[in-house]
Image (cartoon, rainbow, N blue to C red; front, side, top):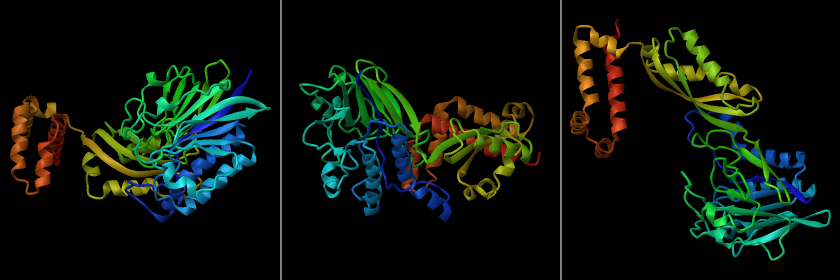
Length: 421
């Protein structure tokens, strides 16, 4: 029975600089600089170790038109490593690396096939002298493609036992990504393909888990805190006449994660230290080998709230936990600690006590219970702002944000009124 095994990756965005990090030093910069290339190397290693039949890349190999010569020179040798093992690569160009902008300048190794943008073409993979799989693809010619490219994918007159479609585009809602080459699942259900190897979305998503299986592998290396979670590629196996099977393979060199730590009831610094260290060492799905970049949010009511709010305290804590992290083979680096804690005081209990604090809290309650009163309060603050943009931003706040600000103001006031106590 004819069968194929291949790795599907996409959105490599090689040569992408890391961005949006609050703390930098030269050693950290050095460790992160080559992460996208190193993750691609892991993909090539996986192809060789798993003895796959071929590699599929569904677009956006490079990040933009400004591809460095060094980037090209590091990309080609990895493809050649596969070619030397007799493993072909099939790729399409996406919106970040359109065909007409770079591929003609690059001499691809033998056994590497890039589909052109003029029409949907196909290549037949032959194993043991027998045609086993047809791989279909169509590149982006320019960076913005708004037409439905999936419509152009059609099986050949005499298709091989397995048919794979490689497409860079948007199926359904693209989330934070622009909608390029949009199509729907229903557009392709009856086209006869076994597997749709998709690219463009930077989060791993199995769009359809039965024939035709449709998968976005996501980018194999996150580049900032907007791309958190595990990153990697998919190992896919297809036997003629059977549903494709697939397995996720992690490939990231560094993983970004947002971590929330509830420190309610924490009374001493040692308790806080234990909470933070335990959280750093127990990130969900952490494999112990991948470098970690964390943004930590401290929440809850704690007796340490006032201490944590002192100028420079959070920065010193961050430095403490990062000490020595870059001296080993892997690290867990805290990019920032955000303070969302409250004093260890119950406002409802304070309201039962006589005095000024109780009366102030009752005023806050009236604003919480009456949206019109809260809007009026916000508007009165707006008049005191000199900056026009600040006034505009304040005027556009959602009801939820307004209540959040009111809650934060109440917390600050409680802290000040009860500081001595």
